Length: 272
Image (cartoon, rainbow, N blue to C red; front, side, top):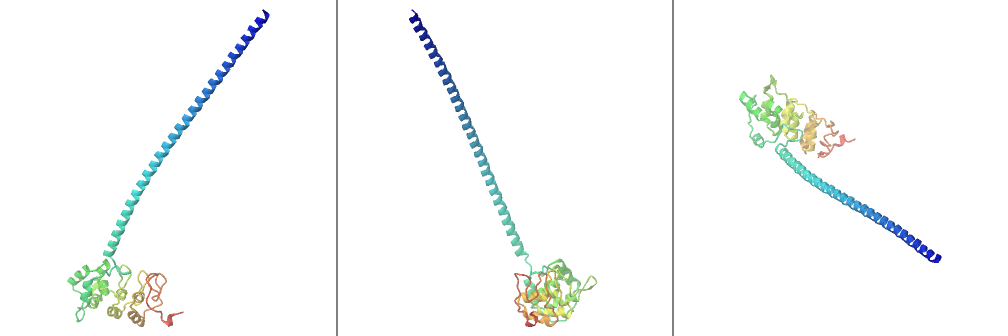
């Protein structure tokens, strides 16, 4: 009987141990399932975060592309506006193109034609009707004030210039060294255009042969830059100073500036 009881007790203990082991295994399995669920949840969170990031990146990229297209559109419109302005500027420049340093002496083909038809008679001052008409024909305010003397000097209108110098303005005769908006005298304007006969007229009326304009250029600067060497030599023979420098530090033998070089050769006597 004792042996039987001992055997039963042993079976009970063994079953209890097995039950305990099963409980441990169930707990371990439950914990493993819990960890697996937590792991899956973490993976889901990561996937969701990744998708959200990709979505934000895509939206950001789309916004950048939108901004880039808008910038390109604005740049294109700005370029078109700049091109239109430049075209308009060039058209206005061609339309209102003026001679170097001589805003008041714009080209006038009619004057060139009339210069060859000037009368061969003694000059006399302008009458009142002529004063009004010639003033209207001026190419700038100062040219108008002095009855177009700068325009006429440009085109070699000898007789007209002679008459203007005999005409009064502001209670006295028009000064031979009157200035235009750029500081040019009639003699400088005549020299700019190789009008030797008109230049002689101004010199006979005591014009300042060494006058300078706002750029510091003299008659000689224009003569030798534009290839009017004969007129330049004549002016030098009448006392023009070929050593004077303009605001660019250039003499008449150097030119007006770095791009407009003189065509004259400096005399040996002037070389250092």
